[in-house]
Length: 422
Image (tube, rainbow, N blue to C red; front, side):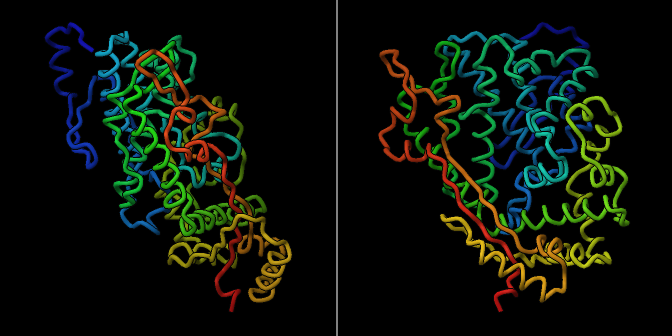
């Protein structure tokens, strides 16, 4: 990525060539002045106040890292991937490199408070990737079209498909960073992956990303590590109990707000408590767009502390339970939850807390979660052999369990206050 610069431009870039000391990779450098300007923008700085793993720190105390850190780490890895592919003779122009770097930097900019935990609760029916796209388009207008290529790559519309795969696929730079970073901050060593090794083995065949065959064992470990991290961290039963509790708090606050009850909250949050917005409204209503971008974890936590004293018994109980880490008991099992057991616990809750059926549904509930480490129905992970043959990792791997890991696993849960067992 070399450009001829005037003396003034060189001085400008040198002032923006900042160095970050990342705990995972060490010293990483901002590769271009546009990247620096994006990092400095308030839309991106907001990610400092959005936790990467929601309420996982209630189980793993070190898991306090943010979307900001993850985005910078992913951008660092993307720079390495570009260099590797260029050294293997793959043409990546300056504009394409800057585009894919900007795309990975901004891939999570649409996350709301507590990341995935509140994604379908605070904002219903609008995925964070959709909001990311809207934000990038907004930034592009502010940066006078400098993100055109980034948007095309992000949306999968650019003519070089492998660039989009670097940003979003089953072996993308996003996953390479978050697995390693989440493992580091939680202390769960099973999630450690050889991201450097995987990037060194990257290649492109027929406009598709591929991994050289000698890197196949690193890919096997990557898939196994992803599976282990899901069950040990992302879908850990106590993490689930905490995140369901947070979700129920917001759902109760929304119900009360829409019924006309007074819910102390910033005006930006009240908009989402009282209303449901579509993708079109996000795109065309500046008030909604600005309100969302003014929300972060701090707003939600501050409100929950306030709601601990709310006159609504359910909202105050749930809020106190979260603040004081008094989490529900959660049962995970392979078989569907017995409806009689669920009904029995709901009846106990109604009697013990003197509440209605609707109120009891915030304390006792059931559902299911699912996970598969590798989805063979999505874009596949290609293994490139020396003879030029390309095979899917599920076919090429020595480990039989790669095929097993491609199957979706569903577990059913029952969540309820521990005192109902007494």
